[in-house]
Amino acid sequence: MPDDDVRMRGFGERADLESALELLRSSVDTAEEESVPLQQALGRTLARDITSTVEVPSFDKSAMDGFALRADETFGASPTDPVSFRVIGEVLPGAMGTPVVGPGEAVRIMTGGVFPKGADAVLMAEYATDCGDTVLAHASVVPGRNVARAGEDIRKGDRVLERGRILKPQDLGVLASIGTVGLRVTRRPVVGIISTGNELVEPGSEEAGQPGRVVNSCRFLLEGLVTQAGGITRSLGTLPDDRNPLREALEAFDGDILLTTGATSVGKEDYLPGLLAELGKLLVHGVNMRPGSPVAFGRLGKALAVLLPGNPVAAMVGFDVFVRPALQIQLGQPERRWNRRVRGRLRRKLPSALNRTDFVRVQLVGEGEVEPLRSGGSGVLTSVTRADGFIIVPRDDEGLEAGTEVEVYLY
Image (cartoon, rainbow, N blue to C red; front, side, top):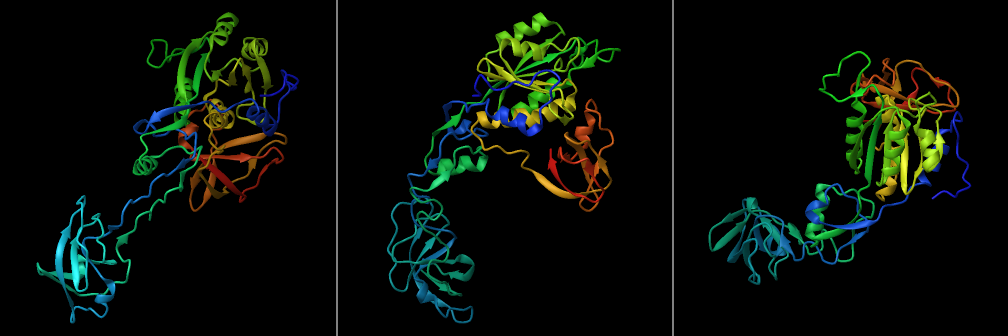
């Protein structure tokens, strides 16, 4: 946590992006662990490394349907000059006890069957003629062919999965294979969402579409982003631009992260930054970025409070820049700023301003070309659905020339 003497950035003094992010990182702790059964672990974050106490597979087994035999006795076998073996038994998957293979003998075996002693390879059924009591080998095999040895996949003591991993379906399969029935994961942070604004109405309401009314799209956008990032959403309603209800809502919050939309600039009814400074600690108010410059954040008791602009695109950028890394820290995940990315060339010049970091929505077109969207307003939500991703114009650049190679962070 930051010390009490950390210098807070007041109204009108915008922070640069990297300084704001450093303050954010120092203001967030990893959540505590909890136990969950394996069948409920999908999408959860591992709180501890997983080390196997068993080998997988736990026994030598056949990797093919065919015949277990001694490889050196097949040398020289061909379709025109097959080698004959006496079949002394059959092994099916799950069968206990297998015959011992001697010279000139073979055991009919199915995929997954326990590999018999005395043999060292499996001749695939496709290269054999099954005559019942005998089998003709039409090809040679080398020792070890088509045999899955014990521990071939996982050995006892192997670190199977690392702490901080977001569990995928295939991970659950691996965990089941080593006998895991429950595991320790990081508790999912509870994220409260407060929408502010006298103009906001719910979708489908009678007021929707009337002059002066705006459908509250930010709430649904943020709920989806929080869920996608691994948090638990708690909708705290839509509040008017009134200091008293806003104060009461901030005082009552008992989750991990509080998100608000609107009322975070420097207008007459933008109460939230002042309330956060009064009730907790305002660390940053205003960041040199576009869109989303009015973003603010600080501490509210044990919770992190992030005040996002009311325009939906600005709120989405603010979430990606500040809330997502905060959730990753709380979940114990390595910080990943937009892992899916591609490179391309700008189709046209892109102006910017010094000392400001720009997040520009773009489309991928043609052969590796990147087209900035012209509908750039932070209230144009469809620009996000039309965009393939965004590029970042660093604060030290006055823009990017056409043909510049850029990295596109994909949505």
